[in-house]
Image (cartoon, rainbow, N blue to C red):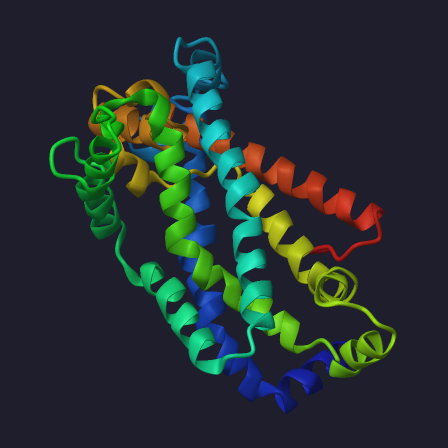
Length: 302
């Protein structure tokens, strides 16, 4: 068996060379840093190093679970993630179906260009644009509200508006780019299926429902599993840039809490414990959703 493996590796050495940078990247930047996870169970002292710091067991986890911020952080993190999943996940699917059904090539290219472009904006630029549009004095949205007889709204300082702004801006930025993979899946559907459906008298909506959606369903299931597996990983950068002392009630999530306690407060062991808890929840959700998809005889990751 060993000779067979070596023979296969020798015959396909070019493929191994091609994939080696990717393997090296994951080893160096993903697996080797796991060595530092042990500080979540220690009272880390920089002068003593990781090995020299004393063990404290689950002390930091217990402190986090019993803290005043625990349920607020879980509520905000899950709230933003679930809203993003509920409204953000179907958006690129609908856009891909719309583009696929458009027969006017020029209009199709214009829609694709307009919807893809926001993806290439940096998070800093995106948040800056959101603040400009929602400014209570000169923002376009508030000018429209005043024009219709309403009162200006301070969107960025109202806790009740934070999740809506975060999710809607995320959909606007990523919807077009995320639709590419669904468009690729739609191109793999045999045209003969649509021809046969037309002969049987099926309309456009019927063909979308009975041909296009089942055709891209394996792709949808895989991406849904991956999205659910990162449901607790709300992006730090965007939340941090949109966060202020007035909306922190609904904008404080686990990633910003880890930054505030770990980097600013220099509580490295405690922040590592919080981050590890967050990653374990994501891992459990990933395994559960993957198992559910496999039991339903859908496509799964493994």
